[in-house]
Image 1 (tube, rainbow, N blue to C red):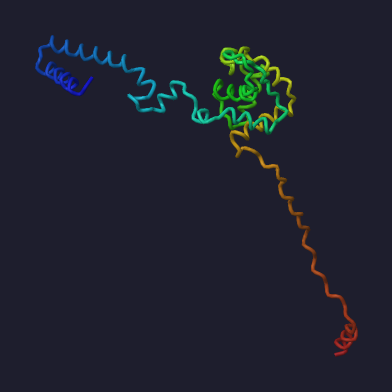
Image 2 (image 1 turned 90 degrees about the horizontal axis):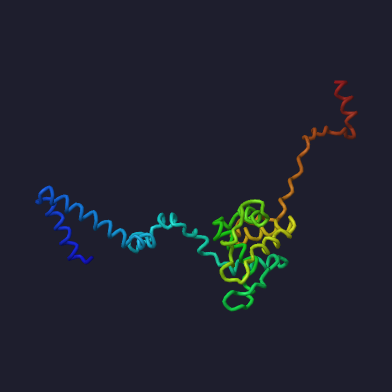
Length: 231
């Protein structure tokens, strides 16, 4: 509604409420309530989408289930490529064909799907080893059940890669899984890497204080002692 029409509307409501009879007041109040409900119905989607008519409100966005800020900044392809640089023996599982073109998408790798599942499906922080351990436990059916309908790649690939990815993770031994967890945590939080430098050796404990050395007898001391006794 434009400003001119809104001013007339508000003026009519004030006039009806102040000067009208009881019946007129009830009708004016009912009309105002009905119009308010209509405005909320029309503009509610816009309020949910951008906050208050175009102003973004973080509290509303968080209640609507938007992704955390760190997830919006994540470049999954770069993180996956960096992971394969650190762990070149990690299975790629990238022979799946695209649903639209039928061509193999070599960039759709196990690492990229693992990262997407961790951040976007489960909403877990990417900077901590414990959270990555929970994700690997999901792949081994030792934590939370994984849903094929939500697994990354199911909407663009001809075949849902979830079961094959779970099998690939399960084939890793314990040392390989620990290395994968450490690499993922380090990629998203370089400060979390523990230093491998050995701690400085402790200084040897000092022994008990040595007793002061007594002066050794010198030549001529015996003659001096005889002279002292004869005096």
